[in-house]
Image (cartoon, rainbow, N blue to C red; front, side, top):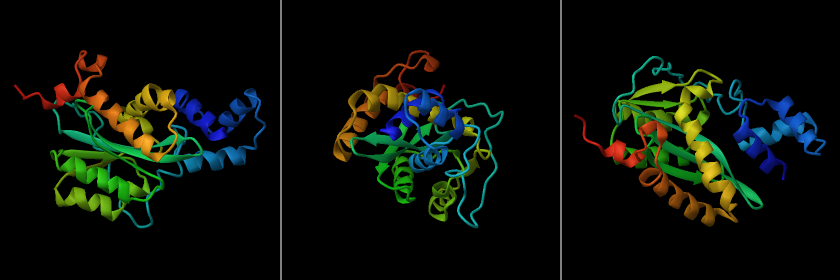
Length: 233
């Protein structure tokens, strides 16, 4: 129950840290120690947007790459892709969701879910996306999944420039953060999945809708698929 409440409040106020989340729970009638709140947030992979000390930790000895997108004009599909991980609640449990998104069109190229934060589901989503096209730049945060040799090795093999957010700067990856809000408000919170199979079915339906039917104001009321597949002038 506490994790469900924290997930919903984090989606509304991603700038809340542990102390403020603890205080908010108290306003909802739940007297919870801040250490317990910290443990639950770590388990869920949720950190305040200005400080992400846990999921953004690189693996020991892994290389961190500079952020390449500051001031860069995004003007075509497959110029920049990015990815991230979010928590998806279920009745009696939860899974993690990762997705690969094209920055220019907001098109979701691939997605995967997992019951753990192991690297495999992230590399699987990356491989699926690369079966469709190859980006010039791939941006991630500094999480251990994305700094791993398994993940960066795939990018290096394709000669894709690797970009990584500044530590604790979730807004460096703003389009994925916006995608997570849409997924949760328009799908997850509405349908309240019973289990993993229902989550897979629901998310598959949603991402098809998101790509091919959902009109985006920022895309001048076009769909991500229409913008992604449009031929350059």
